[in-house]
Image (cartoon, rainbow over all chains, first blue to last red; front, side):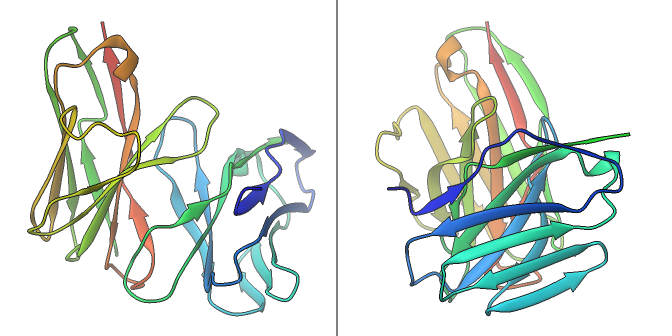
Length: 112
Length: 116
């Protein structure tokens, strides 16, 4: 079993839809959680990070963490064609920047 | 803030030659830098972790002599692919930690290596 599981998709939605992206994990030692967005042939871009269970909102993006269920989600409201990308969840341990464990990525296409 | 610059963005080379890729943290001191390799439609594969002034730690299966990593300063790490062969063709991405949010890795834009 992988430490982090992420549905690879692909996922296609119409413009304006609410998108839900999810990851599950097995290692309860993970303490902080991130979502990265990666456009084709580009490096990952940090979207959201959180350290605790609950919701964190930033514009159209909401990150949700449920440590008891070992489940994290990223919600995108009012999705736009420019949101079309691969979304990677990542998890790590506290302390200085150390190795992250990445999900396999979900490829999202928002259709105009 | 927390900008990581990676150069070149694309390099084409002949088989047998060496290629150097640079990764710079522009507005912070990167205590740790990471090098990843990514194949099409796949996730990131960690190759090595480097701390400034010390030898890099390579992941299992990554050839140290093939992929030379130098982290000479807190803002610069380099990856040299020695005697490149077509099977080394891939997308290489660096990341740096120690920026705006301490525990987060910030990524460069990646380098596409094509070995002919």
